[in-house]
Image (cartoon, rainbow, N blue to C red; front, side, top):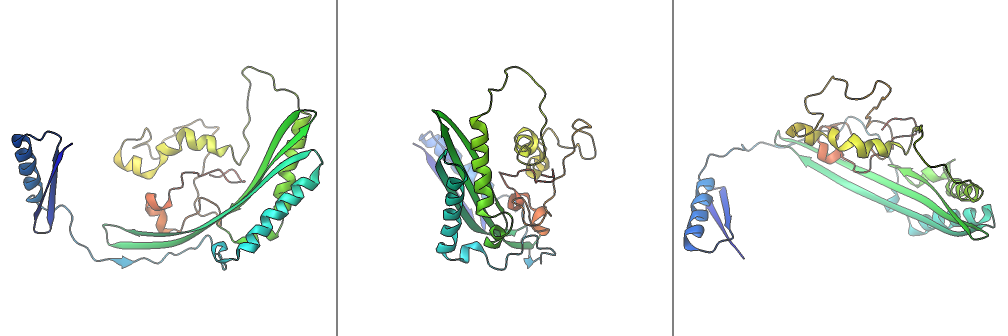
Length: 267
């Protein structure tokens, strides 16, 4: 239960709220809202102009979202068949496909308008192998800001299916890993998600702009071990974290919650 008071003065609006319905509290909320509405405007009106993007890091002539459903279904069926044919001990297969076309428009208070069309395709295969009651699983997949043509080359549905099946079969004969602390070596690729969760959010532009990140004001300073080198590069063509040049100036438009390290070690 509560009461909100909105006061409009010209083109300005003030709002205040009270969860106490006594006349005194409501009048106080009204006075506060009126004071806000009568205050000086802090934002000036600017003209908008569209900024052309100088680079396109994910030129897709035929977006997957415009392709026939039968073409996408065939990718899933091919992955399913290849995984089951790999070894008779593969008992279950789950092949998945997903795509999207994201339309981005950012209008800044500086008058610039930036637009972008961001395609995304993802294909994956998950397998379960069974041998004498021993169940093991494997998974593999790929994609990016690409079209269906991506899966016609070496990264075919059969490639990912065989890799997922291979992982499951290999683990059927694997020994239990020893317990305790031990040294771990992380190669380029998916281990980049560990870096993202550990420090990635603190490196985001909006947190640093507000000065609430542990890395705020540390530009040019060493903040990690000399053995650690990380490159945040949104210009790698067709990757999941790729973004047009002008969009990288707007963190909310370019931000990808699931940014992962690329195959060459770059994130």
